[in-house]
Length: 507
RNA sequence: GGCGCGUUGGUCAAUCGGCUAAGACGCCUCCCUUUCACGGAGGAAUGACGGGUUCGACUCCCGUACGUGCUACCA
Image (cartoon, rainbow, N blue to C red; front, side, top):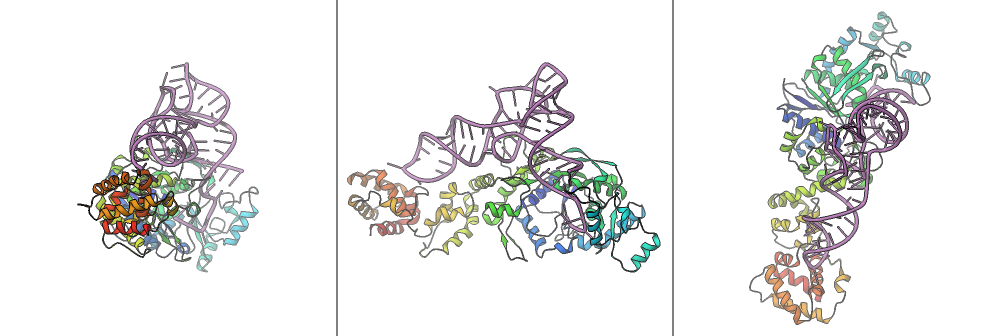
């Protein structure tokens, strides 16, 4: 049987780190087994629908290089892939469950349910559930006669279809990560399967679609584990038990400080992204930063995510997507949640930057340089981006670092270390630099070697040592105490600019 | 509260009964570099707790504690 997996997000907002990791594991598993990876949009909750979210999710997958084989955009043999467009198809299965007595119709209003929850609360901490203990008290097809039910339906009374959970039945499921997991069926309430608006809930839609789409392996977050018995029962009641996919409940990604699931809020609070790409909330107009816009390379982002909860068992940490496809195994996924560490995430990106060839890197960096150039007045007319990139990549972790670390190659920098430069400044140094600038014009060639040689030869004549004048020169050219070798910088910016920057200080 | 899941350094983690408990990130020291990095060499830092099982337990079992998830006509 062909392996088929799916990622099934609801289009309600930005795509979370954990979501991307779920996509990744799906993708890796599918590709490793020669299977299909399908994207299915779970938009059954009309009230939570957010404009643009679906397109955004697809853009994120594209950026990460995790392209689905079937999707709403691409289509496929099991189309449509948007649950809202499959609406009409779910009712049939709800009826089937009704007919077999595994589901029932309920007419209760939200207020009535709320009242029941309060009146029958087990203790002060928890409200009663709509389940075997309370369903006999409610207005449903279990307490009403068939005639009454039909009359209500005929009268247009809104109703939902609920699963009838059995009492005290042990439900066991095999999880690829956790092994056998058991539940008492009485713990779960009679979940709504079909809502009053005719839309299915996640529970029904997921089972029906996984069956119809021939899904063989289902990966989802650990938060779904408690409702898994409902799903197992649904597969059974619908008569599809032999087709139920193999489950894998993925561990959660936790916030770095304290405890709990990592949320968008944590990112805002701690200053790192949580979403794959920038997300502009159409309702609030607020933009939440994404890894892409922060300057991450998609390969680094994906690699980092793969290692959050999984490892190959070797010491290797850097993997190409192709390598991951071959080495990933669901059995080696951790059971426990992992705290997200942004420092480690940056390290991955830094590693990828160092390993990216200069020409490719130059293209990636270009927009950031162009952006930076808008903020300066006097800019150099020509520059070799590839060469500059090779000179500064060592000290760059994120793409925007290239501007911060290399702006002086593109524009005359502002002197930020005036005091350091002027420290111990005297006529001797003034004279030295004046003479050196003059000597530059007589150089046979303009290379960092000839520059350095002329500098070194001139120093003793003014009774100066490297330590006296090298740092001042750096600050003249760079503006601060950082960057590649000074003479390499001088070579790149050329004689005219070098002379200009030194003379600017000499006055 | 109930139920589920989990628990090796600050973080990610190896170990599938033999441990003097890998490695990576971060941190610290030193070297390289008369800048900042990169790189190199070191260092501090870990099995939640209590019982078993066993010649031997981080590894298996049971409790406890702690954490976390769920407990909607949301996914």
